[in-house]
Image (cartoon, rainbow, N blue to C red; front, side, top):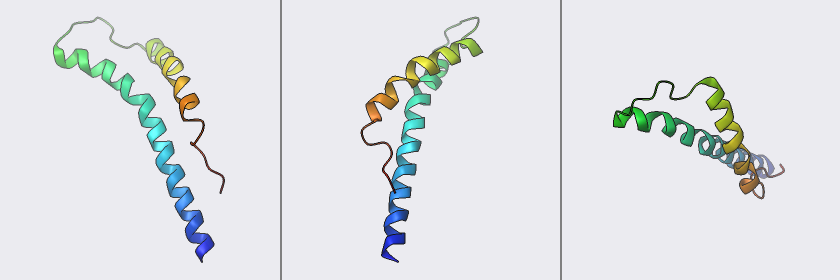
Length: 75
C-alpha cells in the first residue's frame, strides 16, 4: 500500500512538471500573438504556420536543457 502511494506521488509530481514544461513553451508564443492584437498593432500576418514552427524550434530547445536535471524521475 505504501509503495502504491509513493508511486502515485511520483506520477503526480512528474505530471505537474510535464504540464509546467508545456506551458513554459507555449505561453511566449501565445503572448506574441495576443500582445500586438490587444495593443491594436496592425500586422498583415502576425503568425503564419511557418512562424509558429520557427518559434517552437527556437523556444523548444533551451527549455528542456534548462529543465533536464529534474524533469523526469524514475518510478
